[in-house]
Length: 267
Ligand code: NDP
Image (tube, rainbow, N blue to C red; front, side):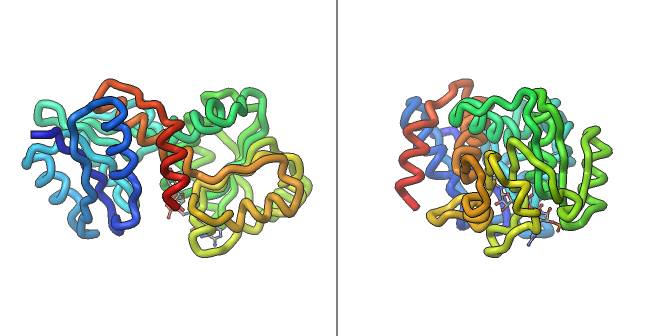
């Protein structure tokens, strides 16, 4: 029987992870099956335990369970511990091992796929939710010149700033500021909304929206209208974080470029 994996979340129907992992498995000749699992909001632990008891080898975890997944795990990688959240779980000899591949996926997409080194760059991260906390440490590891975090609810940005030794601010405080890279880790684009970033902050920068889809996101359109030098949505991050999970589980690193093309064409 094929080794079994799954992505667990609530909601889950929209997840593209099964197509991505199926493509990786075909490419690397791995015999595995990867499904979507909808966990009830109040029983992620039950869904996970049933999946592992039933022979599951590993799981990806998405909104809103990444922090709970971290808490439930018996062992944690350094990057899961830094984030306090897990998106990749492996089941080994009865123990749950947690990792977080979101940050590695983002950094790989920006620095390798898009050839944009982050050393000595000025970085602004917008948002202070689960996605933001997963990417701060991996971005800092690239050696940026400065790192700001802005969020609608300032206290949440301040808590992360304290945890990671970076600077927190409101959007209004960014008037006149300039950045080399601005990462939108808010869910605003999903509501067709924009964080209230002063437009001059966008001039000459690389704008990256973690949200992805067929249409240009409101944030990327805003960047284009205000002089951003380049832009990217989050499809590359999605595929790279999946490739990192695949590597953890299978010990093989898939070639992500053809899978990116295939997924982009499927929108
Ligand atoms: P959370 O719900 O944990 O956090 C949402 C964040 O967005 C909060 O900081 C919130 O601010 C902010 N926000 C929401 N609406 C607005 C708005 N209208 N204006 C300004 N700020 C707003 O979500 P996640 O962190 O888990 O995910 C964020 C986004 O990243 C999602 O859209 C998700 O799809 C995407 N993502 C993409 C990945 C990829 O691989 N491409 C991987 C992971 C996530 P406040 O604190 O004030 O409420």
